[in-house]
Amino acid sequence: MEVHFTPEQEDRLAQLASAEGIAPTQLVHDAALRRLEDDAQFRAAIRKGIEQADQGQLIDEAEMDARVARMLSV
Image 1 (cartoon, helix red, strand yellow):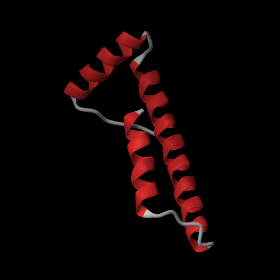
Image 2 (cartoon, helix red, strand yellow; image 1 turned 180 degrees about the vertical axis):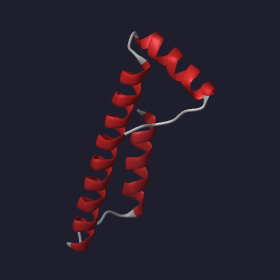
Image 3 (cartoon, helix red, strand yellow; image 1 turned 60 degrees about the vertical axis):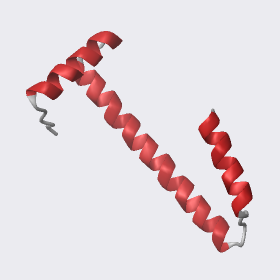
Image 4 (spheres, rainbow, N blue to C red; image 1 turned 120 degrees about the vertical axis):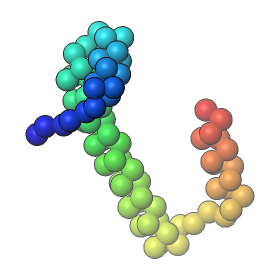
């Protein structure tokens, strides 16, 4: 698989990779794998939420607001 970047994007990747002490190709590889893992976790959480909703396991709006506030304050 090939990925193409503009020269400006390549410069930015090179700077980030240099700051991390790794090669730009490794930076892109690691970022792609993290993105795939994050997506898999997100989709699993959505499936779990749908299953819970289907089973009637819901919370009220005030509890949801409190949970979101806690998540954002971390």
